[in-house]
Image (tube, rainbow, N blue to C red; front, side, top):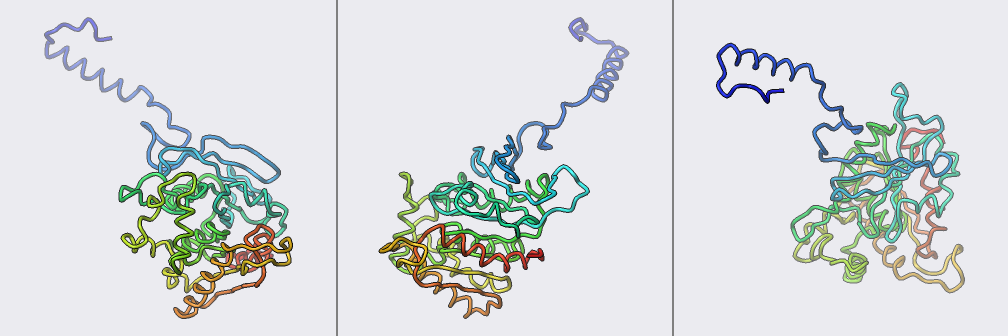
Length: 338
């Protein structure tokens, strides 16, 4: 509209053009905000880019995450009766985070257990987030550079805020997990004081620095899918402090004030195994869990429940059973009627 403005402006014409410019800036509407509440492009954080109803009370959120380098991962919600995240008058729901193990994904708990049919969870929002094939619930060291993947930041900051803002999650939370997810559950509760009111670990990696066997085993997991194992926590000697900061045994003091549930088999064939089954992994984790239980007792933890049930391998039949065994403790911490 200014194509025919003379190259030399009179003072009057200059004032008129200035007034017009101010009026245009005031009256022309700005671009609408993005659905996530962002303006002027993406900002750090997470946003839901797709929602899929996969079964009764089961909703999958596809979440794009800055902490994961802009990648999109899925989170499964098992929703409570009456859940309606769009009704802002409804109070937010108490939340159980269920963490999957290595080589699993966000569908593992609903696919392998009866969690979706458990009546005592109909008044709770159950959050089952993706954590990577071998993400270890950690912000990876990446040889000192940090960055993608930052699973801990994604879960405890980005996803938590997203769920509490838009999807009906309240700030009363508990966390449980199996194997790698058992370590994640203990670690998140310890590293983020006040975030979780209780934690449970089933066959969890509870003390990866226990001995050389334990270190070598977890390094083997770190190397899965052709990964450089030093990317996760670095070298267990040179980056010892990083390892200790992710080892529940070395975080035991931070677990003193909340209920903790630990369970594990001894790696021999148990009642839920085929005859002759063995698991060196479960035997290793059994020793780790005994060490953590002893350390929790030493540091004065007041609410520790252990179920070291002897014969039993590293399998879903035991983890489903242990979830049910620990639910009274977990739901009690949420003050949910069981």
